[in-house]
Image 1 (cartoon, rainbow, N blue to C red):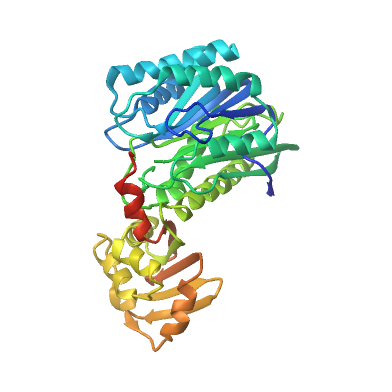
Image 2 (cartoon, one colour):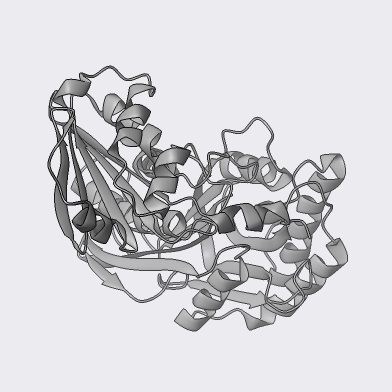
Length: 407
């Protein structure tokens, strides 16, 4: 597998564009358009929140029932959530505008929104934005990057990645972009992710690959414990790489999944590391578990503990908070068998052994915890299973950002 520059336009046949439509922001691009030269098979996963935004409902229907997809229209600033029949109608209006501008069927257009909940979209601005973007569609890496920037809300950096693998003697590319900084919690998160590939793969295998992979990627991140109304991951495959179509499990499917996992995990970590107001990516590895389920439960409990997140912000090796979070997770383990380590670019240190603190240097621990990426490793010594979750520290700025988000 080879990492390359780019995002949603890295694979063959994909183009992107962006524009400043003035939906909410007055000084930046806030709409993006992704387009494939040929029809794509589509897969998707969506929020588990019972309150689902209109674009989620629209995309669920398209992914399940439409014969193909060919375009995605994304806006930032207004989420089009809790907007009733009017909001759902705007999804259809958006698809209709894109259909006319791109000469593709209305039911081949996916839509996505992110931003403030409860406000109706200014449809005149969206329609105008689509007309502006259609002739600007371009397959350059720069166009993909501009699209990644346009879908940001409270994100501080654009998020994109691309890789290449060989399948059936052909070079297959998988690239993607995402946005997400707050209202992020396991089981999909306000996250939007768009992944494109030129692989030839059946719709059934594409959906299976995505559904399997999100369990270890997007579902393993948390910023603040809030599961959004708009969470969406869309995966498009246009077959332009020319590889033999992947129709069943096997070596080619495994290679494709490896590339997809790298893209999804990288995007997921970028979101966790850009949590609202955060100063550090906080990674938690649980090893030595008796089952994957136990490891997942323990790692998620640690990553979502506000007290632990605050300790990471303060560079404080307050290991008791981690052990406490493990204890109320619902997973059964022996706390008197747990070993805990902290690790970063500044070094690695064991903090507790068999549930009891070692004679470690607080100064050295603080140094390790002061890096922009920090890892806690908990060994429960019960088996060979493991899991990794990603989050961030909890800072003063998180409260400031969310106290006046609508204004």
